[in-house]
Image 1 (spheres, rainbow, N blue to C red):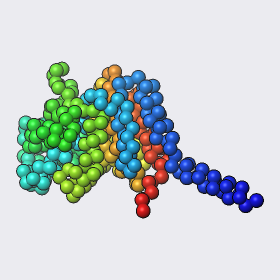
Image 2 (cartoon, helix red, strand yellow; image 1 turned 90 degrees about the horizontal axis):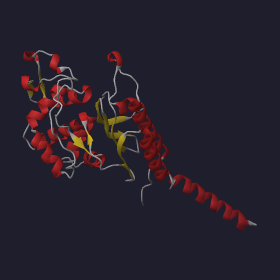
Image 3 (spheres, rainbow, N blue to C red; image 1 turned 180 degrees about the vertical axis):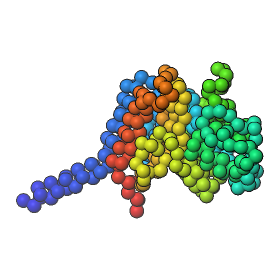
Image 4 (tube, rainbow, N blue to C red; image 1 turned 120 degrees about the vertical axis):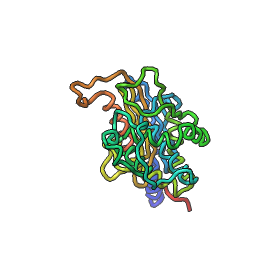
Length: 301
C-alpha cells in the first residue's frame, strides 16, 4: 500500500516543480507580444530581455525605427565615458550658449542667459527628467555627435545612429534626418549599462542612476510607484519609442518598444488618449504581469 502513496507524492512533487519552472510561460508571453503587435495595426518592433534568466522576446527586432528622445540615453553614456577619460568635467559649471537654445520641450530656453550656469551632469539630469531640448543640444555640442556615433559603433550597436540635434518640430525642415535604431540594438546598449560595461561598473552605475531619475516617461507612469524605470520615451505625431530597464526587484528586465503610426491630431492642444497610448499600455502591463509571475531563478550549488 505504501508504494502507490509514495508514487503519488512523488508525482505531486514533480508537478509542483514543473509549475514553478513554468516551461510554457516564455512561449506564451512571446505569443502574446506578437498578437498585441499584430492587432495594433502599427509598424511595431519589440525587444524585451529577462536580465535574470537571459530570455529574449523579440518582434521585428531588426526593424529600423525613429528614436526621438530615446537617443538621449546614449548622450548620457557618452558624457560619463568622456568624464571617465578626463575629457570633460561632470561638475564644472558652464553657461548655456545661444547656439544650444531651441524650441520644443524644456525650461532652459525660457531662462536668462546671464544668470544660467550649471554642470554637465545637471544638464543631463534636466534633459532626462523634463526632456529639455536645449540641455540636449548643449551636451551634443560639448561631446560631439561624431564621438557619440563612434562609441555606438565601438560597443557593437552600429544600428543606433545619432544624426541630428534637438529642434522644435513646428519649425523643423521637412527633410531633417531622424535619429534611428533597432529594438535589438537598443536592448544591447541597455544591457551594457546594466552589466557594468560602460567604462567600469562604478561608471555604469552612475549612468543607470541618472537614467532612473524621476521623469514623465509613459512607461514610468504605468509602473507601480516603487519600481524604477531607467530609460526614456520618444514621441512625435507619427512615432513612439520606449526604451529602458525596469528595475523590478529580483526580476529586472529590458523594455524596448518602438512603433510608427498615422499622425494623431490633438484637439485644442490637449493630450487626447489614443490607440498608440492604449497599445503601449497593453504591452507594458503584459510585460510587468509576466515578470511578476516568474519566480527568481534558483542559485546553483
